[in-house]
Image (cartoon, rainbow, N blue to C red; front, side):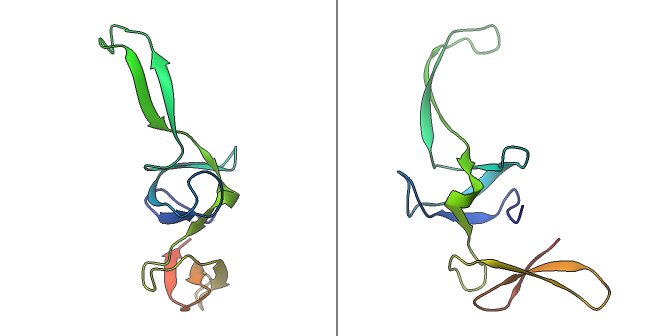
Amino acid sequence: MDIKKGDLVLVISGKDKGKRGKVLSVLPSENKVIVEGVNIVKKHMRPTPKMRQGGIIEKPAPLYRCKVMLICPRCNQPTRIKHTFLDNGKKIKLCSKCKEIIDRV
């Protein structure tokens, strides 16, 4: 997956279209990501010894990876990712708009 924990992403489809958020976790086996403040669901929780107060809890649910787009830290726009190799053989991610190195893979 091109997206890692801590990346800034933009939601491009669904009920939260247009929202930006930080990736909290990545689920590569399911091809999903959990984004902060996006796709919030309400879960009814029963009181347990661990959590004394029961009730309705709001938490972010996973989104499919195809519904989010990585935001380039330099140009601050959603972009597709290009993969290239450096001279020493390391694989890197490039912003397709500004050609800036986003992250070393």
